Image (cartoon, rainbow, N blue to C red; front, side):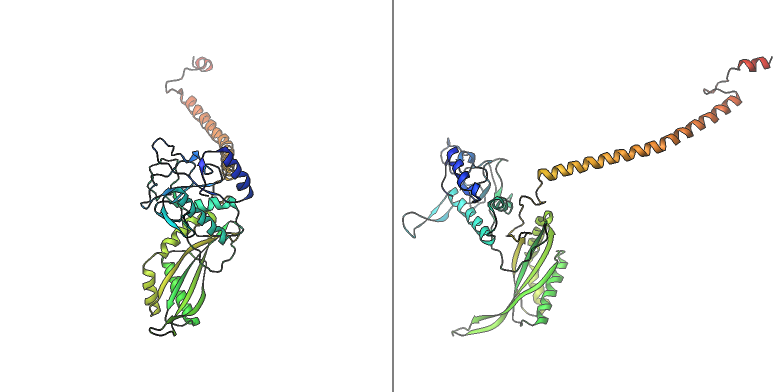
Length: 379
């Protein structure tokens, strides 16, 4: 919502009561400032300062904070807010290039709408962490201190491929290739292309659990100088699926993204297939156990990707239990071995003492004084 004001408890309370409590996602501008004596703290704007609202600050074309944008611990994410072509109030079709956090928040609102259009059953509780966790981290040159999140909005389309539900606690990561080839859609050729892709992915050490040719159809292009269409190539959609536990999804997703940007794939496909094959990659996307789809690996409440209080308590208790068990084991070993060691020591001392007495030596090595009986017997 581009509507914003100075901090207002009344406005925050109303937004919370009417929207957030009714599971409606809210995106708000962090606010603008222009005067040196005007506060730049995004926590002094409403409703962006309200917990649960996605508060948006503005970045410029140099991937820096826009000079007018408020910032701070209440900011959740940055989005472009400088030189944005916007609708304007002077006419039904009027436009104007405008700067502002209102423009930045509109991009985030569009990303939320895109996410909801793909996942109509998704609730607002998961939308905010999904948008934030799918953002691009650490790319902004900020001069705002450690309290300001270095997140830049990231959004893209999700290919229209069939997907399947993964087991609970897992994600399916899908990626695909669209191939343009003058060859036909024969089963042999499809298998040949699929085999080439699989070998290439194995060479790249990229895991995948299943590969299939999703579709193959002729492509018709207009004949030069005529209105007729000519079939001169075929389009093949090849889909790959990777099953991964959710705590590894981000690492695997990044590896797949980097691999698909490799420049040698198109050359390899053309050489091994003996035809000119144009490869158009479909960037990976993610499906969770609820069949929710994301254009990047998200971190959502309730997944093992997050370190919740419950998981921390469980780890601490498990560590304490293991430590106590180790102490008990060491105690038992000590009790079993120590008496035998004492007996050996005692037995050894007695023998040494007897030898010393027979030789007339004391423990110190000096001659032992004779006992009274010995003294009398020697008289």
